[in-house]
Length: 189
Image 1 (tube, rainbow, N blue to C red):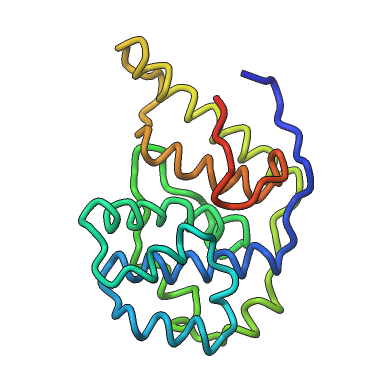
Image 2 (tube, one colour):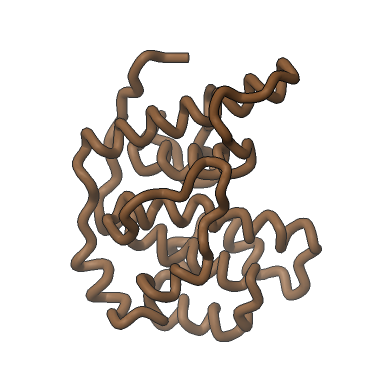
C-alpha cells in the first residue's frame, strides 16, 4: 500500500455533478423508481449521454435480474462519495454503515429544490487536498477490510468490504486515478 495517493487529473465539478445525477438515476431505478419516468428525465435533461456503458445496459434491460437490481442499489455508496466531493453532504457515513438513500432526494434533482441545469452550473468540489486525503482514507479502509478477509482476523476498525470497495471506486474516479472512465476504474489496495 502506498503512503500517499497521487491524482492524475481531478475531475471537474461539472463532470462530477453530471456523473452524480446519472448515477442517481440508476440507484433510483434499483430502489423502485419507474424506469420509464427515469429514462424520460435522462432524455429531457441530456444526461443519458452521461451514463456509463454498464448503466446504459441496466436502463435498457426491461426486467433486470434480482442480482442486477442489488448491484445497482449498492451504487448508492458510490453516489454518497460523489455528493460528499460536491460538498452536498457533510461527512460520509462510517465505513461499516450504509448511506441513507432517502437523503439523495433532498439534495439532487429532480426532487431537490434545484433544477438540473442550476445544480450542474453551481457545482463545486472540495479542495484537492481534501479529495486526496479522503481517497487515502478510503483506500486504507478498503485495505483493512480486504486484509481482514484474507487473514481471517478482525479488522482494526469497523469496516464493511462492500461499502469500502464501492466508495473506493467513486473517490478514485473523482481524483482521476489512472485516468480511467467510470466502468474501468480500479480499486487497488
